[in-house]
Image 1 (cartoon, rainbow, N blue to C red):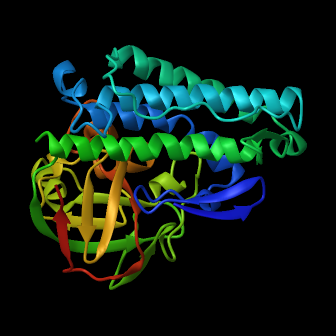
Image 2: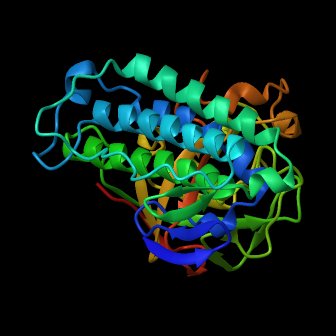
Image 3: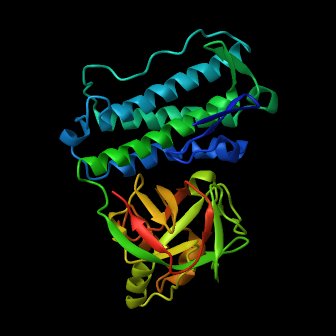
Length: 332
């Protein structure tokens, strides 16, 4: 993680989960708070209590401990933000030790996840009530000044980073998406709206695909939704059902083929050509997609009702140019 000083504290630039605090404007920072509990929940899908209570090795938390740690950090961040607002410049001393303990902590994961959701929602509502001056208020932690805005971004980084940790542990325990190899079938972009149109090549980086944009950043295009991916094999199955849908119609940037799409979930890592990507969330379809379904039921591709059919969001962990035909690999 890089620590480049910027307004309110150091820039957080993480090679592991792709988080870059400079990509998060204030609106994205506030709206993204709602995403953390959801992506953690999807990363846990299908795991039983026994698996979530095991440490993969003595130096690594269990999945349950990671979830509870995210709650701890969100609680601490909210406390600091509230303290900075109540007493600007307050010195809160040294940060608490939240490191690994020798003894495994048993965690009720559904309860911890519910508390994660409540903490992040409280933070979201609080941040949404602030004016410009309050956003810049700061507290002193460990002798360093950190602004409200810095902590608002840091708590997002913590949640996304540990979602990626959970995905890694799933693989180690044998519950991750299996290794598969496919290809990039098509690339699409637009200046907002659907369908996105095919292009012969595209430059991809941490902020997404060059030349692509979204009309509504409240629901699309935030940094944790940098790229939208979908499966040509899923599209073919939908067409076989009689739906007039095609690649790019539902707004994906990258259409892939040959990988086991239903096995991919938030926390999965895949590589397109030489660009690794972290899957972050399922894409929620909207009314703009209704035209591609014979009954206008765009929830046909909603994960909650039809698992395995949804588009997926991803954060690229590197930059580069890609073209159709490039190799796509799901990496355990």
